Image (cartoon, rainbow, N blue to C red; front, side, top):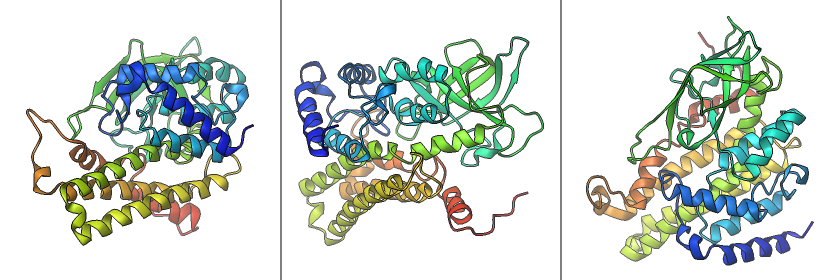
Length: 389
């Protein structure tokens, strides 16, 4: 295994050599509120990365990764940001489901599902939230039952499902024990989306785009062996996935955050807003805040013996969600009065407006700030649990 600096130089050189030609126009494209941008071209870029061995770099080599150390993964994400490379489209499969299958999947599941993730041939979405079970995941009502053949038959609704419209598979938390409640009786199923009984409806967001979706399951089917863990163990597996989501995957997320912050700073210098001492102070605090997010993510990951951070990862979720929402507010203040007007008809937003509108959701999705505080209080600090009806 090469040293961190050698690894950094390798990815930096590769990006410089390959973000050219047909891929040159992808620099800076995609990201929160902009997932619609040149999606097909970004998918082609992802598959080019796969062919060159640059997807799933932190996975063990036996599963198609590079076995990169934590320090090397940090170097990869930092160099990717510095190159202004496009937002990744395979994030959920690579950073969430893949590590979950490595930790909890069977040998057959790993052999079936990991190679297409490495190759970016199959894209995944996350079937957790529901209309009455958003941040409170234990309130899941989607159910799954076994039919005469042993297959799972899924009925229910998921919402806020990122990139479902572009995905072939969804990992679904469903209630498989009739009469069960809360975190008991849940199972973690791998469900194909291209089948009868699945309807995907895009949700138009404040940005005018549709990254999120509603997914309706009406008798959708998946094979008996497409369950991760035993029936009823879905809560444990789902929590591990959330740990991965708030662990190494946040390093990739910070690629976009740093790019956005640098763009806001550049615009403040361009339009003179940086001459305002209050704006300068907020820009400085945003920069130090992002560095704190990075250090906190590394601290949590370094202390996670299993590779999946524990409940303390909720600290990081609160921090980055609040930081990013405040960055959106800062971007609008840097724009001034001009930020109140769309650039064109019918709803042509600039990057700062899109950042502001999309980031309003950060403290809600993937577990609201209120839920994260409950987790920290109960599972980290050991305080009495909140009473529930």
